[in-house]
Image 1 (cartoon, rainbow, N blue to C red):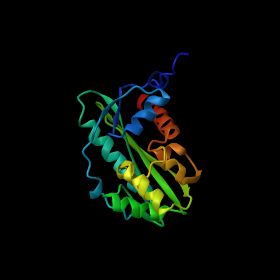
Image 2: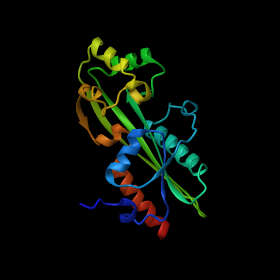
Image 3: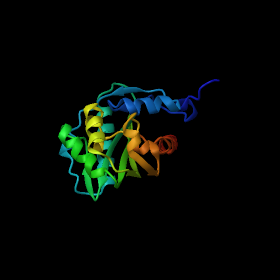
Image 4: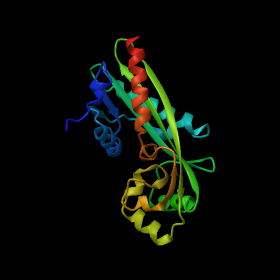
Length: 208
């Protein structure tokens, strides 16, 4: 069976670049058939205030990453930036600072419903640079977690590089989730349908 090559299907005018060091985002792009290269943008996420709307926050960070990515390459390209955060009771839970902080976050999420926001941005390096940003949110409900379960998960080290101190794609983190309302890939960190349709519209406007 011949794989679908989405760069060709979408008739992308430039190569695709992912501005992220996340192996999860790279794996998702490869999974659906995109061809791309990667850069790792240097963006100080802590410098961006979190007191506004969560969607605005993740869109702003995604755009910063995409725009920074365009400055790191020497050829025309469409650069993808993305950022994900977890919000509980209006409070943003980004990556934990250490194991104790990860335990604290997981205790907060235990038995509760929170919202995962992922921002998505596209920016071009071209003669006429353009950019666009959007976002999607998904509600996630955790079952009640025991202290032993939290300690065992944090001891793996996996939660330390993830917003909200968990990854739904992790072997053990997945069993914390009792229900999901919305796009699963938003939780993982790259809403694929949103990326595809945004890219399609972006390219159509580029050619108009």
